[in-house]
Image (cartoon, rainbow over all chains, first blue to last red; front, side, top):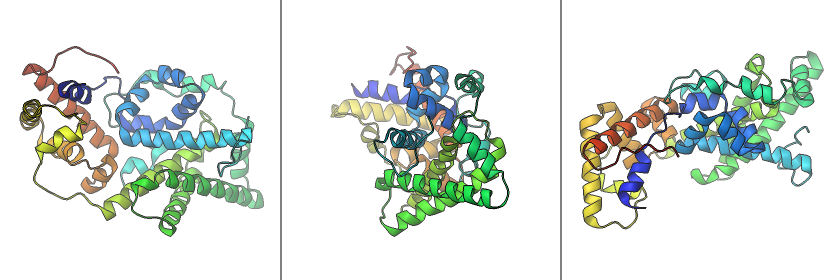
Amino acid sequence: MSGWTRLDAFLRTDPRDVGCDETLRVLEIYAELTAADPAEARSRFPGVAAHVASCGPCAQDLAGLLELIRAEQDAADGADDGGLPAAPR
Amino acid sequence: MPRDRANPAAAPARGGARRAAAEEPQRVTATRGGALDEASTTWLRTLAADGAERDAACARLHDLLRRAAHREVARRAGQLRTTGTELDDLALQAADDAMVSVLGKLGEFRGESRFTTWAYKFVVLEVSSKVARHRWHHDAPTVAETDWSALPDRLGLGPEAYAVQRDLVRAVRRAVEAELTERQRGVFVAAVLDGVPLDVLAIELGSTRGALYKSLFDSRRKIRERLVADGYLDTLVRHR
């Protein structure tokens, strides 16, 4: 990728991007959907998907929440207690 | 602490490009069948109870949040210049603050996710906020002369020919100076050229992550429009 192409990618903004506040408002819902079906999450929340694709801090928060969700699921599966109790099934 | 970080569930739609009405969480409720799972129901019932039942539920909740906070702090430990006791303290403070938020906002939980996922969000946001404050305290941004030569590295550009990099930097600099407000220039330089993390910059400027992201969003758009007008970039619209 040339320098101009990379610069262009950095500067491009997605008009669907809903921003940090709206993303954080629905983060737990988006995270559960993502854990279950990432494509479905992107389809139902395109603005949130666009946002976390370009906002590092919100992407970090999503990653943290996803890890906690998966730890609960692993505990339920008996694979790893993750330091957390098993998620209800 | 940025306002929306301390109050995540009640954060108003403020920053960002626009609010997508189609993304109201009611759609997700429908996906979940609108029914609260049994564990979440139990959490709500016991936390709303009186006496020993509530005390036991609070103790279980705090234990859960504490373990979640330790896990999240460990995940972010690479961002911090500390280990051991200080990390434990940070995790405990995050769990304590998340506990206050969860109990204070129980009435706002609408069952659109599992209760624990909703509670974990407060933990994640508290850890995120405290990590940013820790980084700001130990490595606050300093005012320095703007170093435009850092731009290629900041954008992750490869080993371009010197002439290409020079033209690119000049073009961006001209756009920044011509198109951005003073405030937008300050945020762009700090976040992009100096590489200051957005949450750390928010503390430094007494702003919020959302407000600074919006500023950068607008700046990127304005810079790009200028570069298109100047013939450096094409106008083709693509969605990632």
